[in-house]
Length: 213
Image (cartoon, one colour):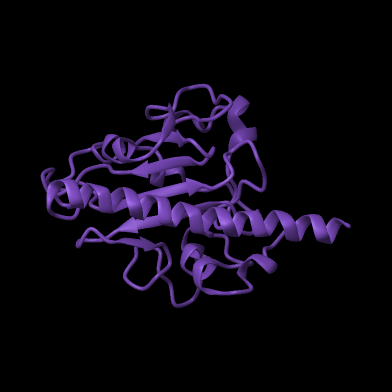
């Protein structure tokens, strides 16, 4: 019976990931149709991506950048995450060995109508000299109040490339691509382990059957 429950839960995570990928892609396509061009990461101003996405998604909760106190839908912002009383809300890496690095998730968050929590990394762009041009969209496909709360298991990362295309993190050309699988490994101690699992989760048939516990 426990194995059956686990298999059912993992199947729900798989379905959630595919839905999240489709939903975010659709939002970017709507943006392109309205503006005549794909979204440009080099022209995005700091924190500009969040309101753009919210315009094309059915949003039920605007979490801002994240508040000092986690609530029923949102997590604390990165600058508050080390507060002792917030430790219970921290996501773990793919293998559960470490807390994740929150710096890739702290430029805005909101909840869409199916309960998914969307987290943004959009620190800057080409208009800000020296700013980080990596633009990430991460989705907790079952909301942060439901387990496993692990990067690469229910929290998945995507990256928008220079052409405005949404890529699953871990695909070649993305920030967390690794030939040695340090970002999607049962043994890696990297604090972004799991961030590179999205590509595998979408392409490997047995990925969700073999999630580490």
